Length: 161
Image 1 (cartoon, rainbow, N blue to C red):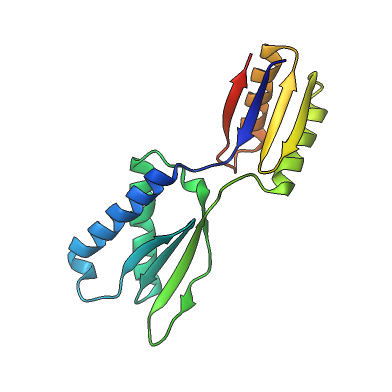
Image 2: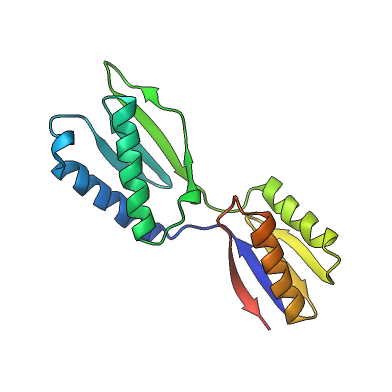
């Protein structure tokens, strides 16, 4: 029976490369000389450091450009509120989304049921598996999911015929 998996996973090799390129650019730019501007990656969290909100915004913009150049969708980034870390220094946490949340998975499942296509959607941990008898129905479901869940950077894996 044909099926596919709906997943939400960033390419972490490219994310790591983008963070390293951002750190390299911060080190060479004249407007960051002598400041505490920095960026680091731990697990699935990117931490931005800066002296002011404006500087944090510049670091975030550089990171977004580097991610875009490496074909990583910036919708994977979940930017948190900036925090003071002593003196006039700030830090901002940016989480990289990985996996479909339970609420979004339920929305996808409900969307498939309401579409009147002869398909079944099953939530499996952090992905949604859609199965059906016809390949055309599966392709229609992919288009429907892309259209209605535009705020999530979804990809489709394991397309089996």
